[in-house]
Amino acid sequence: MNNLKNSVRLIGNLGADVELKSLESGQKLAKFSLATNEVYKNAEGEKSAETHWHQVRAWGPIAETMNDLLTKGDTVAILGKIKYNQYEDQHGEKRYGTTIQASEFIKLNHKQEIAL
Image 1 (tube, one colour):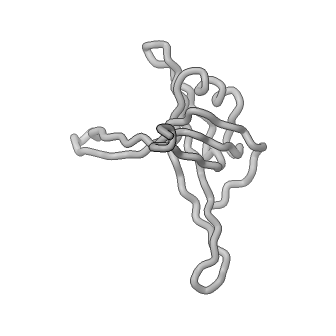
Image 2 (cartoon, one colour):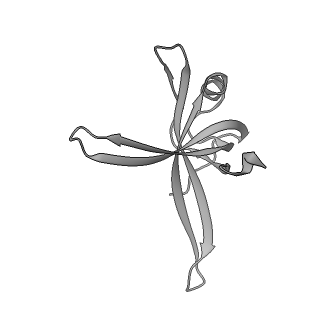
Image 3 (cartoon, helix red, strand yellow):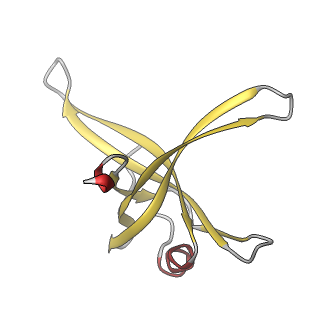
């Protein structure tokens, strides 16, 4: 049950190719944006769609595998957790962000169009 406390499952499309970085420590970091689409009927009964963007991060071997297998437009299922970040911008202002730290993924298929 501990794994359910901060657990996220997303299915979406990559908005760009995976960016793989090698840190000074030798550890690998993969970064990419993931678009999830929500389709619903609005108050007038018309079909509407909303796209939500998520910033995904992965570390170590999974980062390298994501870099090898995933490209822009791919549909992927991600399992991970939410990470809240606080940082200062170049003007010293506090900024906040949310990322998804991926622990597992499944590539579902190739190059589906992202609904914007």
